[in-house]
Length: 375
RNA sequence: GCGUCAUUGGUGAAGUGGUUAACACGCUAGUUUGUGGCACUAGUAUGCAAGAGUUCGAUUCUCUUAUGACGCC
Image (cartoon, chains in turn cyan, red):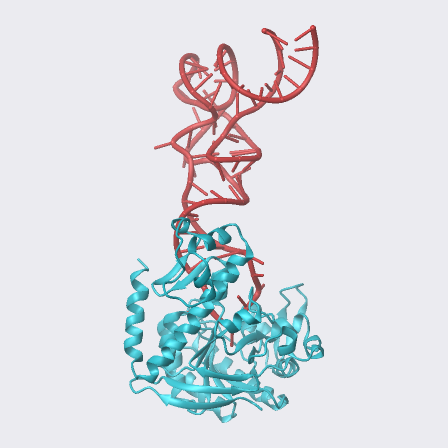
């Protein structure tokens, strides 16, 4: 079975939705946050720890698994779920983001046929096409595959974005034509930067191709402003079907998740909780804190008051600071557990607020608490 | 006891008779949004063992003292 999305409720005062995604590996409620496990592992965490955080879908990455260990190795092991011992749903990103980060000369490296990369491992020349990306994902056997798109930088011009999204549409069609895994859903990606007509064009044309779900891409990169991110969502959502999942790629920050849900987004993913964890930072209801800061040396309280995560139930700020400053890997693990749980709990709270039609009040209250501590 | 050499920030250390004493680590703070994992950015010695002298000017030259290493009796 491919995935199935059920729309359970629409919030009265916003475009927020409550939904359910059914997959072969379980059912998840939306809005939802998906932890990122680029190389078939959420860095520093066992699958059990990821599940204990309340995770539904976990992300992995086509580009990285293509290079190492190779999609045939994963397929030989019995597919990605068996390979990484994760029995929940998995979504694979197409490698489109690596177009953004690895193709140095956009004009030259990105062609109609595909994208030329330099391997980040050994510098060798690589060529990835929409067909190749989908074939790899078919073999990886994730539950949801993503179309291969170009994720242009926020600084790209209108002309560039227009040409880019039109090419991404052609790539989406090519990818869909070769998609052959009956157990795997395929999502299309809407591009177009912060421009209303481009987002509309991209959304309308992508929906015509009839995907199992739709993403909004090209946001939250390269220093894009929050205003532009919200515009990208607002200009795309009206053209997406109500009975399909909507996925905002690469977001992120607690505030942006709330604002995204208000604008009609169902699922999110982001490296932020695990990346900042490895660098010693933690989300709290009062804002982000940096456990590297000296003031936490003798702070023997949990990271966040009343947090129900394993880390907060068992460890103190002072101990975690010690692990972080001595570069013990357990520090990153404990902070990753907390940060992932924080974002998942946030989406759980958002779902409760939607049930009671009080999402806007929930947002205002969250912002009030989150910014006080920032000073 | 005599002789030789050394003494630069929290640490390892470079260096020069003349504006801001290199670099690294550490430390302090900040950044991080479909991960090129463990990174990046910024700040961090009003002082070069102490004292005196030479000089327009000394961390850099001279002397004394202190401490240390090595050698000799």
